[in-house]
Length: 135
Image (cartoon, rainbow, N blue to C red):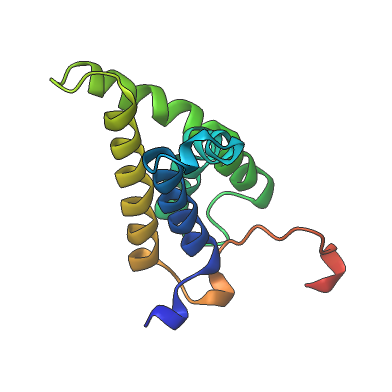
């Protein structure tokens, strides 16, 4: 079952858990890796997992729009809304609540994308360094 888990969604979960480790563990949270993983968690991973859960298929939005939505549009729209919701909770907008909410959001939507997922050939996958003639 886990052998069929898509590599892109596994990478989203791995990067999210790595960010949590690099923020919470004292020797690791002083490295520049924390900043890189934090930026990924805020600017990319929530949107990628959201679009993967909403549009698991290759044909839902066309390739260019799906890539644009996954790489920038969705996270920029979702993260402020999550922050606004956190503002009205007793936890407020602090590091730990933001880390927990973004991590739970990203991982849960990656799992939802897997559950809703299509067979490997029908899934939308971002391919880097491959020309269109390879398909």
